[in-house]
Every structure is written in structure tokens, then in C-alpha cells.
Image 1 (tube, rainbow, N blue to C red):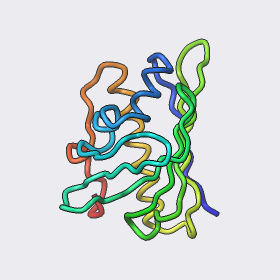
Image 2 (image 1 turned 180 degrees about the vertical axis):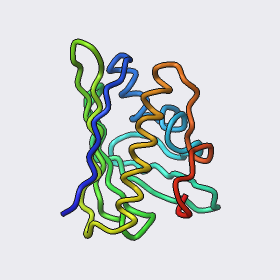
Image 3 (image 1 turned 60 degrees about the vertical axis):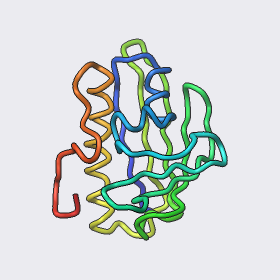
Image 4 (image 1 turned 135 degrees about the vertical axis):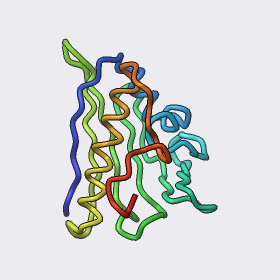
Length: 148
């Protein structure tokens, strides 16, 4: 099955990177401003993207403090439903390393390619916001195509 993968080095403590991807306040700062839910295993996170209903709903599958966030997409774009997202964290001598995976795509569709570009954009936004630059989560993000 096709998979999106990205690796980003971040000049911030590993615990700060974990908080940014594991908590609703952290996620609001770099991905989507409107997030509803509790980031605890078994709970769901709803991400609102300009509509009255969530654009994406994630089930929190696994959390390992400072090292792993694992979600399963349970609602949203048809291509996303059933896919798995992981944020794996490690440290090197120079930086915290975030390895992102969005797996389980049925086909390498044009929408998957679009999402890969947007994930890269948002992950770079995560990096720069933790390193002191202003964040650009949705809806303040750069629109890369008519898909948003």
C-alpha cells in the first residue's frame, strides 16, 4: 500500500515536539486551528477545516510520551478513512528528529500526492514554529492548489 513519509530535524527539545503533535493546543499551533477532543488513547480528535462538520476525525491509537503519536483516520476524505498516521520522535546530538508516516492509502492517487505536499508544508511549519517563527496552521496556510 502506498505511504507518505517525511523526516524533519527540529531545533527544539524532544518533549516540546511531542507536545506539539500529541496535544490539542499543540496541534492548533501548526496544523488546524480548530481541534476538538481529548488526545488520549481510545478518544477521537475532530479537525475542523472551514465547515460545520469535521474535515477529518482521528482515533488516538497509541501515545508514548516523548516518542510516539499514532492515529487512525475514522472519518473525513474517503481516501483517508482507515489510514494510519504516526509521528515518531528521536533525538540526535544536534536536533530532535520527527519521522512522519501516513500509511494505508489504497492507491497513489493525485489526492495522495496533494496530501504529501501539504504534510510537508505543515511539518515544516511545525519545525519553524518550534524554532521561533510564526506558525501557519489552517486556515492561515499556503494554498497549493484548488484543493486547498
